[in-house]
Image 1 (cartoon, rainbow, N blue to C red):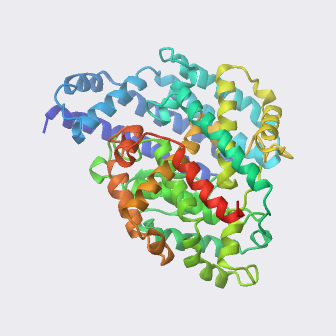
Image 2 (cartoon, helix red, strand yellow):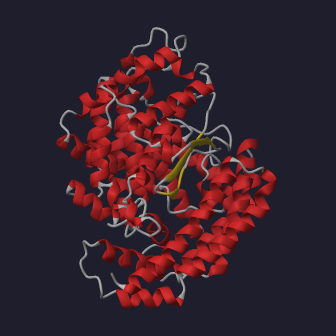
Image 3 (cartoon, helix red, strand yellow):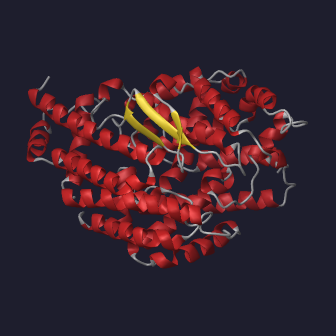
Length: 498
């Protein structure tokens, strides 16, 4: 083994440790920290971000990467992948000053606390000055890079390496009319009954049921946990400590189940990353779209399927006998897949979900280009909701304030949610070709073959391959909407008798 490679791994390991320590503080901020801790936490995160950034962009790292560039030429080797991914990260990170990284950590920590308050009071004006600062920093970040075909490309590349805004727009423009057409067909069909989903359900029982489901999936609670937070998320401190958070909504109590499945999908991807990649840039998922394909697969293709509920519904009915009295597994399945334009993205049904994402992509591009004034966002949001989904949010909490991402400076992120849906369906077709009795296995509550397939074909590779290369390697084609359209059409034709 190259001595220089050992040196590089040592430095990258320390950088990884610092970033993971910052992640622990961020997790704590959302799960445990009292609101008064916000200023100090911002300073702490700013300091850690600055240390990690300075360490990862040092001249020593640059020199090691330069020397190692020609030493590992086998594209399939882990070492070559480590050098390639590290060099790419180094090139991006060295363009961004450490002071900026520290300032961004402080601004976004305060913005998060303001978002929590603004959402609680349903008052965008509380969040507005913070979001203005966040967007200014996002625009400043873009200025550190050479001009791209579109400024948004620079943000998108952080989450979906190599992907262009024009490619995403093309995929969405192809998908949008097909989804709108499907929604129109469903609108003229007889609506399914779902009143029993909105009765009173005991929070602890729902929470415990969610943990039983994800344990059955294969989420390893010896290497993970589920806690409460304002917005569900997954975070990784190491391959042996990958955590999820969740929330309970009294008006939509069973959404906790689907959030648990979703976040566990992310976490199982992280738990399945090759342990030898630990403390290197190869650890964890390759991109957010591939990551999202895992969460959406477990939440929807598994968790909202009829075979799944043929297994789990008797147990759910036993847990909630009065709420589900007279309800069959088939009518429960139809209810949880009811298509109805709704305000909240995370609770949207599969056929309208991508429209929520397309709306956010338009808003982000508008903010980045400076076409939208931040003060006008609630109004623009509501107009686009009317345009896309035919409904208008009654307040800011159910509209422009519903997602946490902008408070954390995460712009360039949203399109990966919809891309993840497409990838999940591409993978699903391949999985079903390889595991021909998958439905029967799910009907018996057996998920080990499915998780095993994902471990072997996707999870184990961590960040070794770029997302489009990995998807092509596994499915034979790059990200494409055809499989997803086939999946939605078949599923909803059955539910609504189209």
